[in-house]
Length: 92
Image (cartoon, rainbow, N blue to C red; front, side, top):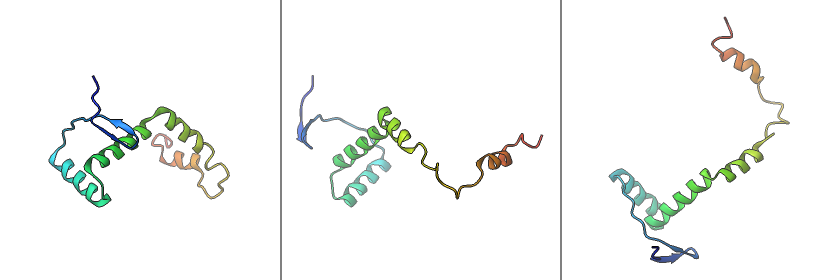
């Protein structure tokens, strides 16, 4: 059973309980103060960022957008020779 406790950001929200350490609680309070928002809003922002970061489709899009990023660069070192220098078995 879902009980809507609050409507914010244009959508219904459900109340949930989160256990925090004293360190987490103090940091959350300080961040909320610094941003001028509530602790709940900071938690929601953090969760939204985490969801965006962990979304497989979003990660795939970011990987595809980064493909070929250094393709035209001419100022980069010779990576194969750097790898050979750092390979512990290369000298054997």
